[in-house]
Length: 287
Image (tube, rainbow, N blue to C red):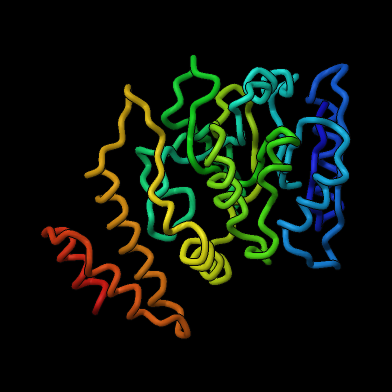
Protein backbone atom coordinates (compact mmCIF):
# COMPACT_ATOMS: atom_id res chain seq x y z
CA UNK A 1 0.00 0.00 0.00
CA UNK A 2 2.80 2.47 0.92
CA UNK A 3 6.38 2.83 -0.27
CA UNK A 4 8.44 5.02 2.08
CA UNK A 5 11.44 6.64 0.40
CA UNK A 6 14.33 8.01 2.45
CA UNK A 7 17.53 9.75 1.42
CA UNK A 8 19.74 8.46 4.22
CA UNK A 9 22.99 9.86 5.60
CA UNK A 10 22.78 8.66 9.23
CA UNK A 11 22.44 4.97 10.17
CA UNK A 12 21.11 5.65 13.65
CA UNK A 13 18.42 8.04 12.45
CA UNK A 14 17.45 5.56 9.75
CA UNK A 15 17.14 2.81 12.36
CA UNK A 16 14.98 5.11 14.49
CA UNK A 17 12.48 5.88 11.75
CA UNK A 18 12.34 2.24 10.63
CA UNK A 19 11.39 1.23 14.16
CA UNK A 20 8.97 4.14 14.54
CA UNK A 21 7.13 3.31 11.31
CA UNK A 22 6.83 -0.36 12.28
CA UNK A 23 5.31 0.63 15.62
CA UNK A 24 2.87 3.28 14.37
CA UNK A 25 1.81 2.78 10.75
CA UNK A 26 -0.99 0.36 11.67
CA UNK A 27 -1.59 -3.38 11.79
CA UNK A 28 -2.04 -5.02 8.42
CA UNK A 29 -0.68 -2.12 6.37
CA UNK A 30 1.60 -3.41 3.65
CA UNK A 31 4.59 -1.15 3.28
CA UNK A 32 8.23 -1.04 2.31
CA UNK A 33 11.04 1.32 3.26
CA UNK A 34 13.36 2.21 0.41
CA UNK A 35 16.35 3.78 2.13
CA UNK A 36 19.04 4.94 -0.26
CA UNK A 37 22.42 5.56 1.36
CA UNK A 38 23.62 8.97 0.24
CA UNK A 39 26.36 9.41 2.84
CA UNK A 40 29.10 8.80 0.28
CA UNK A 41 27.35 9.19 -3.08
CA UNK A 42 26.38 12.83 -2.40
CA UNK A 43 23.67 12.76 -5.06
CA UNK A 44 20.95 15.41 -5.18
CA UNK A 45 17.85 14.71 -3.15
CA UNK A 46 15.79 15.00 -6.33
CA UNK A 47 17.73 12.15 -7.97
CA UNK A 48 17.55 10.01 -4.81
CA UNK A 49 13.79 10.53 -4.51
CA UNK A 50 13.21 9.71 -8.17
CA UNK A 51 15.37 6.59 -7.87
CA UNK A 52 13.39 5.47 -4.85
CA UNK A 53 10.06 6.12 -6.55
CA UNK A 54 11.13 4.07 -9.56
CA UNK A 55 11.89 1.14 -7.23
CA UNK A 56 8.59 1.48 -5.36
CA UNK A 57 6.08 -1.36 -5.62
CA UNK A 58 3.08 0.24 -3.89
CA UNK A 59 0.61 2.84 -5.23
CA UNK A 60 1.17 5.39 -2.46
CA UNK A 61 4.52 7.06 -1.82
CA UNK A 62 5.96 8.89 1.18
CA UNK A 63 9.13 10.93 0.72
CA UNK A 64 10.34 11.57 4.26
CA UNK A 65 13.41 12.79 6.14
CA UNK A 66 14.99 10.21 8.42
CA UNK A 67 14.76 12.59 11.41
CA UNK A 68 10.96 12.42 11.52
CA UNK A 69 8.89 10.59 14.13
CA UNK A 70 5.20 9.71 13.75
CA UNK A 71 3.38 10.14 17.06
CA UNK A 72 -0.12 9.02 16.07
CA UNK A 73 -1.04 5.34 15.91
CA UNK A 74 -2.49 3.92 12.68
CA UNK A 75 -1.52 7.06 10.81
CA UNK A 76 -1.71 5.62 7.32
CA UNK A 77 -5.43 4.99 7.58
CA UNK A 78 -5.84 8.71 8.33
CA UNK A 79 -4.02 9.64 5.12
CA UNK A 80 -6.00 7.25 2.90
CA UNK A 81 -9.29 9.20 2.64
CA UNK A 82 -7.49 12.22 1.19
CA UNK A 83 -4.75 10.62 -0.89
CA UNK A 84 -7.31 8.29 -2.50
CA UNK A 85 -9.23 11.21 -4.00
CA UNK A 86 -8.53 11.59 -7.74
CA UNK A 87 -7.78 15.31 -7.41
CA UNK A 88 -5.34 14.92 -4.50
CA UNK A 89 -1.76 15.93 -5.24
CA UNK A 90 0.76 16.19 -2.40
CA UNK A 91 0.03 15.94 1.33
CA UNK A 92 2.36 17.34 3.98
CA UNK A 93 2.27 18.82 7.47
CA UNK A 94 3.19 22.46 6.87
CA UNK A 95 2.53 24.75 3.95
CA UNK A 96 1.18 28.03 2.64
CA UNK A 97 -2.10 28.97 1.00
CA UNK A 98 -0.26 31.25 -1.45
CA UNK A 99 3.09 31.67 -3.18
CA UNK A 100 4.24 35.12 -4.23
CA UNK A 101 6.37 35.86 -7.27
CA UNK A 102 9.45 36.88 -5.30
CA UNK A 103 11.90 34.07 -4.47
CA UNK A 104 11.14 32.58 -1.06
CA UNK A 105 10.57 29.42 0.88
CA UNK A 106 7.09 28.27 1.78
CA UNK A 107 6.86 30.69 4.74
CA UNK A 108 5.94 34.17 3.48
CA UNK A 109 3.21 35.49 5.78
CA UNK A 110 2.02 33.73 8.93
CA UNK A 111 -1.61 34.41 8.07
CA UNK A 112 -1.17 32.10 5.07
CA UNK A 113 0.60 29.30 6.94
CA UNK A 114 -1.23 26.02 7.54
CA UNK A 115 0.66 23.86 10.03
CA UNK A 116 0.34 20.80 12.25
CA UNK A 117 3.68 19.45 13.44
CA UNK A 118 6.27 19.66 16.19
CA UNK A 119 9.88 20.65 15.64
CA UNK A 120 13.10 20.46 17.62
CA UNK A 121 15.58 23.31 17.30
CA UNK A 122 19.38 23.07 17.53
CA UNK A 123 19.19 23.59 21.31
CA UNK A 124 16.90 20.60 21.77
CA UNK A 125 13.79 22.68 22.46
CA UNK A 126 10.59 21.33 20.90
CA UNK A 127 7.95 23.74 19.61
CA UNK A 128 4.42 22.70 18.69
CA UNK A 129 2.68 24.23 15.71
CA UNK A 130 -0.99 24.25 14.82
CA UNK A 131 -1.88 27.27 12.72
CA UNK A 132 -4.94 28.07 10.58
CA UNK A 133 -6.12 24.48 10.93
CA UNK A 134 -9.16 24.03 13.20
CA UNK A 135 -9.24 20.83 15.26
CA UNK A 136 -12.27 19.57 13.35
CA UNK A 137 -10.51 19.94 9.96
CA UNK A 138 -8.45 16.94 8.85
CA UNK A 139 -7.04 18.46 5.66
CA UNK A 140 -6.73 22.01 4.37
CA UNK A 141 -5.66 23.00 0.88
CA UNK A 142 -2.37 24.80 0.29
CA UNK A 143 -0.21 25.56 -2.75
CA UNK A 144 3.29 24.87 -1.38
CA UNK A 145 4.55 22.48 1.30
CA UNK A 146 7.52 21.92 3.59
CA UNK A 147 9.43 18.88 2.36
CA UNK A 148 10.17 16.96 5.57
CA UNK A 149 7.31 14.56 4.76
CA UNK A 150 5.43 14.43 1.45
CA UNK A 151 2.76 11.88 0.51
CA UNK A 152 1.54 11.37 -3.05
CA UNK A 153 0.19 8.64 -5.27
CA UNK A 154 2.69 6.95 -7.55
CA UNK A 155 0.72 8.03 -10.61
CA UNK A 156 1.05 11.68 -9.55
CA UNK A 157 4.82 11.32 -9.16
CA UNK A 158 5.02 9.64 -12.59
CA UNK A 159 3.34 12.69 -14.08
CA UNK A 160 5.40 15.19 -12.06
CA UNK A 161 8.76 13.69 -11.01
CA UNK A 162 11.31 15.70 -9.05
CA UNK A 163 13.34 18.04 -11.25
CA UNK A 164 16.85 16.55 -11.25
CA UNK A 165 18.07 18.78 -14.05
CA UNK A 166 17.44 22.11 -12.33
CA UNK A 167 17.79 21.13 -8.67
CA UNK A 168 21.15 19.47 -8.14
CA UNK A 169 21.51 19.97 -4.39
CA UNK A 170 19.31 19.50 -1.33
CA UNK A 171 17.03 22.53 -1.42
CA UNK A 172 13.80 23.73 -3.06
CA UNK A 173 12.59 20.29 -4.15
CA UNK A 174 9.52 20.76 -1.96
CA UNK A 175 8.51 24.14 -3.40
CA UNK A 176 9.11 22.85 -6.91
CA UNK A 177 7.16 19.58 -6.58
CA UNK A 178 4.30 21.42 -4.84
CA UNK A 179 4.00 23.99 -7.63
CA UNK A 180 4.38 21.36 -10.35
CA UNK A 181 1.74 19.03 -8.95
CA UNK A 182 -0.49 21.98 -8.07
CA UNK A 183 -0.89 22.80 -11.74
CA UNK A 184 -3.29 19.84 -12.00
CA UNK A 185 -4.04 18.58 -8.48
CA UNK A 186 -4.79 19.94 -5.00
CA UNK A 187 -2.15 19.93 -2.25
CA UNK A 188 -3.04 19.62 1.42
CA UNK A 189 -1.74 19.93 4.95
CA UNK A 190 -2.83 17.06 7.19
CA UNK A 191 -4.34 17.99 10.54
CA UNK A 192 -5.01 14.62 12.16
CA UNK A 193 -1.54 13.06 12.48
CA UNK A 194 1.06 14.20 15.00
CA UNK A 195 4.63 14.27 13.70
CA UNK A 196 7.90 15.47 15.21
CA UNK A 197 10.72 16.78 13.01
CA UNK A 198 14.05 16.67 14.80
CA UNK A 199 15.62 19.57 12.88
CA UNK A 200 14.67 23.03 11.66
CA UNK A 201 16.21 23.12 8.19
CA UNK A 202 19.16 24.97 6.72
CA UNK A 203 18.53 28.32 5.02
CA UNK A 204 22.10 29.26 4.22
CA UNK A 205 23.81 30.45 1.08
CA UNK A 206 23.20 27.22 -0.88
CA UNK A 207 19.47 27.52 -0.15
CA UNK A 208 19.43 31.13 -1.35
CA UNK A 209 21.20 30.31 -4.62
CA UNK A 210 18.87 27.40 -5.35
CA UNK A 211 15.84 29.52 -4.48
CA UNK A 212 16.89 32.28 -6.88
CA UNK A 213 17.55 29.74 -9.62
CA UNK A 214 14.23 27.94 -9.12
CA UNK A 215 12.18 31.14 -9.30
CA UNK A 216 13.94 33.02 -12.08
CA UNK A 217 14.65 30.02 -14.33
CA UNK A 218 11.34 28.20 -13.89
CA UNK A 219 8.45 29.59 -11.89
CA UNK A 220 8.41 33.40 -12.10
CA UNK A 221 6.07 33.54 -15.14
CA UNK A 222 3.48 31.41 -13.33
CA UNK A 223 3.41 33.20 -9.98
CA UNK A 224 1.67 34.25 -7.83
CA UNK A 225 -0.65 31.34 -7.11
CA UNK A 226 -3.08 30.97 -4.22
CA UNK A 227 -5.94 28.86 -2.94
CA UNK A 228 -9.38 30.16 -3.88
CA UNK A 229 -11.21 29.84 -0.56
CA UNK A 230 -14.41 31.93 -0.29
CA UNK A 231 -14.49 31.67 3.50
CA UNK A 232 -10.93 33.01 3.84
CA UNK A 233 -10.05 34.86 0.62
CA UNK A 234 -6.62 36.21 -0.27
CA UNK A 235 -6.97 39.58 -1.99
CA UNK A 236 -4.81 41.08 -4.72
CA UNK A 237 -3.80 43.84 -2.30
CA UNK A 238 -2.68 41.26 0.25
CA UNK A 239 -0.61 39.44 -2.38
CA UNK A 240 1.10 42.71 -3.32
CA UNK A 241 1.79 43.60 0.30
CA UNK A 242 3.35 40.24 1.13
CA UNK A 243 5.31 40.12 -2.12
CA UNK A 244 6.85 43.53 -1.36
CA UNK A 245 7.78 42.47 2.15
CA UNK A 246 9.30 39.17 0.95
CA UNK A 247 11.29 41.10 -1.67
CA UNK A 248 12.65 43.40 1.03
CA UNK A 249 13.77 40.43 3.13
CA UNK A 250 15.38 38.91 0.04
CA UNK A 251 17.45 42.03 -0.65
CA UNK A 252 18.59 42.14 2.98
CA UNK A 253 19.74 38.52 2.66
CA UNK A 254 21.49 39.09 -0.68
CA UNK A 255 23.41 42.00 0.85
CA UNK A 256 25.19 39.51 3.13
CA UNK A 257 26.68 37.52 0.22
CA UNK A 258 29.50 39.24 -1.62
CA UNK A 259 29.37 37.55 -5.03
CA UNK A 260 25.63 37.98 -5.69
CA UNK A 261 25.01 41.30 -7.42
CA UNK A 262 22.46 43.40 -5.55
CA UNK A 263 21.54 45.85 -8.32
CA UNK A 264 19.17 43.61 -10.35
CA UNK A 265 17.16 42.78 -7.23
CA UNK A 266 17.07 46.39 -6.05
CA UNK A 267 15.86 47.41 -9.52
CA UNK A 268 13.04 44.88 -9.34
CA UNK A 269 12.21 46.12 -5.87
CA UNK A 270 11.91 49.75 -7.03
CA UNK A 271 9.07 48.76 -9.35
CA UNK A 272 6.64 48.07 -6.52
CA UNK A 273 3.81 50.49 -5.91
CA UNK A 274 5.13 53.40 -3.85
CA UNK A 275 3.75 53.60 -0.33
CA UNK A 276 5.26 54.99 2.86
CA UNK A 277 6.08 51.45 3.93
CA UNK A 278 7.72 50.68 0.59
CA UNK A 279 9.66 53.95 0.67
CA UNK A 280 11.06 52.98 4.05
CA UNK A 281 12.04 49.58 2.68
CA UNK A 282 13.77 51.22 -0.32
CA UNK A 283 15.88 53.40 1.94
CA UNK A 284 16.85 50.46 4.16
CA UNK A 285 17.56 48.24 1.14
CA UNK A 286 19.90 50.70 -0.55
CA UNK A 287 21.84 51.76 2.54
